[in-house]
Amino acid sequence: MDFTATLLFFALFISSIHAVDPCGSRPQNKDLSVIPIYGKCSPFKPPKPESWVDTVINMASKDPARLKYLSSLVAQKTTAVPIASGQQVLSIGNYVVKVKLGTAGQVMFMVLDTSNNVAWVPCSGCTGCSATTFLPSASSSYGSLDCSLPQCNQVHGLSCPATGATACFFNQSYGGDSSFSANLAQDSLTLTNDVIPNFAFGCINSISGNSIPPQGLLGMGRGPMSLLSQSGSLYKSVFSYCLPSFKSNYFSGSLKLGPTGQPKNIRTTPLLKSPHRPSLYYVNLTGVSVGRVRVPIPPECLAFNPNTGAGTIIDSGTVVTRFVQPLYEAIRNEFVKHVKGPFSTIGLFDTCFEAKAEVELPSLTLHFEGLSMKLPMENTFLHSSAGSHACLAIAPAPNNVNAAMNIIANLQQQNHRILFDVANSRLGIAREACN
Image (cartoon, rainbow, N blue to C red; front, side):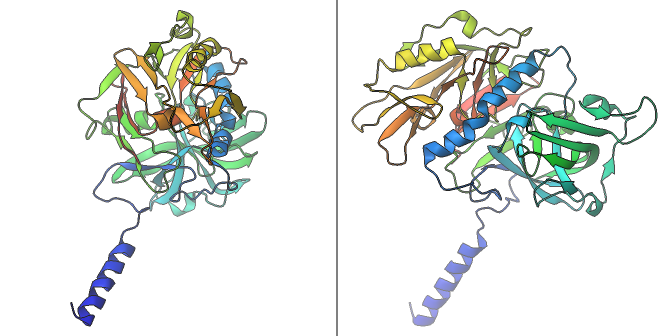
């Protein structure tokens, strides 16, 4: 190869590298990219450099409040859907998706939440919001919704007169430290190549506190204001996601919307429903194994009770899987039989031990009706940055909740395809390398 040809080769090679944007969109792919909140393709930056275990502990610091919130909602006697309901417990969102709102589309990185029924974003002029807001004046398809419309009946905390067609206005408080006010509005929502016209969402105009996801939230629950309900026949009440590890730097997870392209041979378990919290995705957890040992568990720790909200849910917004205290203690007691102590506590994890390469750690398997989910080692244990210690990456549910709920959280769901087939009341789980 002569000198000129060599230069040409390297020029083409370098230009091809620059042409590939790892954070760019995929025009031939209808899947939405799912991004860890602090990945390199996310606009949100971690508060400070820290160890891997510390990062997860900090991300999970709001888990107890989230569990308390979800448990209190399942015991409510009303099925009205509160707008922006669960996010007083989110100081950060764990996963975000890149969407476009309005005409022309404005890019927003919205938190993906399977336990919320609505979407909401900060709008221009918002007091206390982040620098990135949605500009209604720049969208030709934006419109406010008034109190006379049926969508307004689906929200909580509204301020409407008995008669008249004034704007549907909300004032929502959050966990004692955060609140927002918003107007119910509608606009076009673009998800890759799909456009959902007249999509209803909360347009936030004021925030107090720091618990609100900075660019909004996309509710994937079962309620009438969720994405599934508002998209109608487009997605046929079917979606799935594959959540990448929190360590994943670039776009790697995916959100598949609609029945097309979903795995065909995935094993499924029935989706259950509580009338007091109809947006939550309940499943029938029948047991847990540590290694080859099926842990003896009191039946009441697993039983689904639609009247109280007790049972097990799949949730994208909780970081670490939580079990009710007797179930957690049974799992921990079996685990310590397989691993040599002493054991210590690091943050919320009370089963940490010295990690030795020659020690074979027992696996953790979750048994559901119709399928079993054997967790990979990276979904079961967290290792310190130095590698000297490891922790069993589950925790007990807080005692200050009013319903016995087990929550299968996103750390344990990572690198699995989780299929929500609401139309056929089933949930599928299969291993998949999201990273």
